[in-house]
Amino acid sequence: MTDKTLTIRPADAADAGALFRLAALDSAYPPTGDMLIAEIGDELWAAIDVDTGDTIADPFRPSGELVDLLRLRASLLRGEGQSRRGGLARLLPRAA
Image (cartoon, helix red, strand yellow):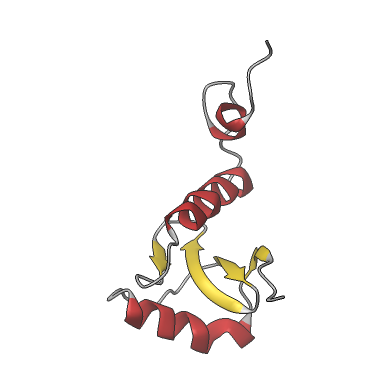
């Protein structure tokens, strides 16, 4: 069975080459800030700059939902998404 584990983590110096390749695939500028990355297995599919919210993603993979998860995680790291109407609260099911 293939490893299909989703990992969202801060990027480190070892990820620089993969981030530059991902930016090239996405026809985007290479990232410069603190980045969160989304990996499926051991492959980088998407990334977000925590401060600016700029994203890069592999256009040849279904990475839209990963970008949404990265946006949510980045907003939580910035201290946003604490209200009932936004952020994590909107993803939780309502009480019956």
